[in-house]
Length: 403
Image 1 (spheres, helix red, strand yellow):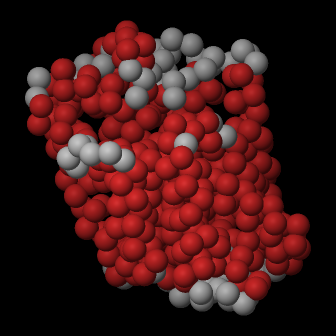
Image 2 (cartoon, helix red, strand yellow; image 1 turned 180 degrees about the vertical axis):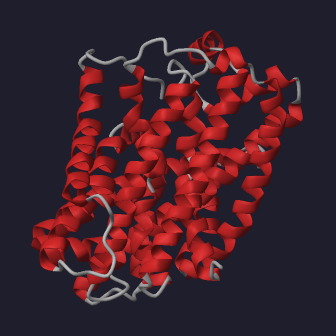
């Protein structure tokens, strides 16, 4: 039977994974059709669950159970490894957190009366209220994530209940408008399985128990995969590819998707439930991302004897994304354009490199991910492909996807 912390860790992984990426999925996969979308989702889930389990393997050799990924990178690749790991993590997390703060502030501003600087006030309130749980620590995030996750599941279940009966088999059987869309969408889909940013926090929370760590990863990633497949089944089944194309032309955003579902179901309540689900998905991702920022900074500040100075860490964690959201709220789209490239390195290449070094240094570890070195090579090839695809899209060799 799952122990309490194992379940909590799985929900933190799932909550971190299911976020804004899921909300953009139907738009991103518009030209692919459900069958190829499902194939791509399962493939990426396999690769990123595999890379997460590699972290569980490597953490068996961590000098301390609360070591962050950067400490592992230094342990096996020296200071250069620490520097690259820390920079890539913080760039990714700051970009994501700025996007979530901006989106969350926008949602909150809709509940406030009209006054000057309403959006800025909402952004600050969103950051302060939810940021407080992150500052208090992993247990606090675990507690609020459980509550929000249950609400998110309830809202999601209602959305599926309303949409799935309207799904058409003909829509689900549609072939891609261009088979190259499957390649073009891969980097965007990879960012939707970015739970690796809290690996250090989860390992520490589980007291370095590898078995429970593995269980949390497998369960925590299976929940998002199931949710993603059902979400795609509902949206692809309800909207034909031609309707998707019209939607993308009119409003290629979550708002456009919300309005489309409202029109199709003929229910304003449906639209509001989608908004609630969107808000909860964004909040749980924000909590997980900021927990990852804290982990990265704490691991960095450990080098300077300030690992327990939560005030300094809090200022360093929240100031950059908050300033970005306040002074350049539209710029997060540009920043997220590179998220797939950064994810390919941090979520796939780094754990593969660490696992390779770990196996050479510790050939008799109790737990070792199946597949041997061949699986490491295949994973590295996949990561290189994800990095190259955006450049091929920009060059016009591959078609661009929405978002």
